[in-house]
Amino acid sequence: MTLNRSYIVGNWKMNGALADGAVLDAIEAGIAEQSGVDVALCPPATLIAAFAQKAKAIGIGAQDCHAAPSGAHTGCLSAPMLKEAGARFAIVGHSERRAGQGESNTDVAAKAQALFNAGLGAILCVGETLAERDAGNAIAFVTQQLAESLPISAAPDWLTVAYEPVWAIGTGRVPQDADIAAMHAALRVTLVERVGEGGQSIRILYGGSVNPANAAQILVLTDVGGALVGGASLKAETFLPIVAAAAR
Ligand code: 13P
Image 1 (tube, rainbow, N blue to C red):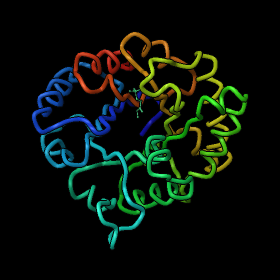
Image 2: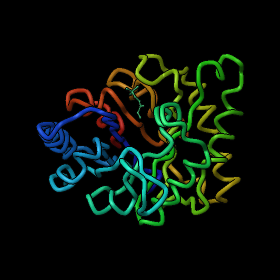
Image 3: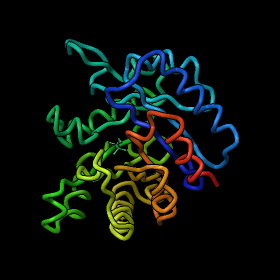
């Protein structure tokens, strides 16, 4: 992982079927001409093995993992299992899991640590709700969320952070450029406080309604190391222009 390469990650959430291997193929064909950008996709867990076998330039990741390596946790998947399926990393702490599955910062830190223990990367998500933003608490809330969600072994070679304002996800609404830059700068300070100088080179992605029309403007902001893309990652036609906007 290096800061002078941008990182564009697609999160398919609970979408996608085996037939969408064609989308993976189209994205892979399209990124062949791009340089200076790392590209990854997180399909649902049912597709990880098939996609990992097909993918060459695209890193395949999971959308979550359990903190334990094995055990009586019906319906869950561990980091070693995801690794065996072909995942290179997983998203942890996505707001849809924090809200829908009641995941706490402590849970998120444990999941990230489990990924490190298994030799996988992590994309650790943080972000404020609209109520927190309207109350003027966004930076305080999100930096504390990050500090409490960081695993003990946090380091730039395996950890990526993603700032995803909850109110910007799937809504078409995006913060002002200055608000994104201010949040990323604050997250950078938190990373350096917790990790030391290594925190300078942990990539911080922006996520929330990134699309072909707004990607270039967001990706040039200071401390924005790439994007975590939901809806626009489901089709090559909308994902590839975002990758192209990040290419250097
Ligand atoms: P959208 O790009 O659909 O807003 O989703 C963002 C997201 O949650 C990515 O993890």
